[in-house]
Each structure stands twice: as C-alpha cells, then as structure tokens.
Amino acid sequence: MKEKVSQVATLFSGFVMAGCCLGPFILIPFGLTGFAGGLAIYATKYQTMLITVTLVLLAYSFYLIYGRKCKKRSSIIGLWITTVLVLGMLVYTLMAEGYL
Image (cartoon, rainbow, N blue to C red; front, side, top):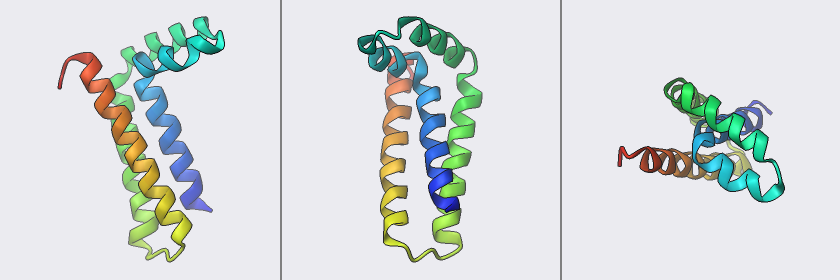
C-alpha cells in the first residue's frame, strides 16, 4: 500500500512542479483559468524546491519497490509508469524554462 501512496504523491508533486508550464495547458480547456494562473505563479516561485521534493519522492518509491524486494508486478509497472511521467514533466519544464 505504501508503494501506491508514494507513487501518487510523486505524480502530484510532479504535476505541481510542472505547473508553470504544463498546468495552464491542461487546466485552461476545462475552464479553470484562475486556478491555472495561481498554480503557474506558485510553481514558478518554488520550482527548485518542487523539483527536489519530486525527485526525493521518486527515489523513495524506488526504495519501497527495489530496496524491500517488492514482488508485486503491478507495483513495479506502476513505478515505471510514474517514473516516465515524472521525467517527462521534468524535461518539459526544463525545456520551457530554456535550460534544455
């Protein structure tokens, strides 16, 4: 159960991290313009901290799966899906900021 919670927390943290660039792209079509703007301002202000928290949560998820020798196939697949999504959000954020 801890594996699933840490993976969901990692995805949420990754979405907030990418909120400056990815948030408006997703939320504005749903009519959440004010929320998208607030998320963009918040994510830009604390972006370095959010990147760190996201990567720490991802590392914790890897520890729960591989450090404790978790044998559940669904947990391993979920971890790798989470990893791909979070790294995709990280690359998108860094590209939008002009670092890549």
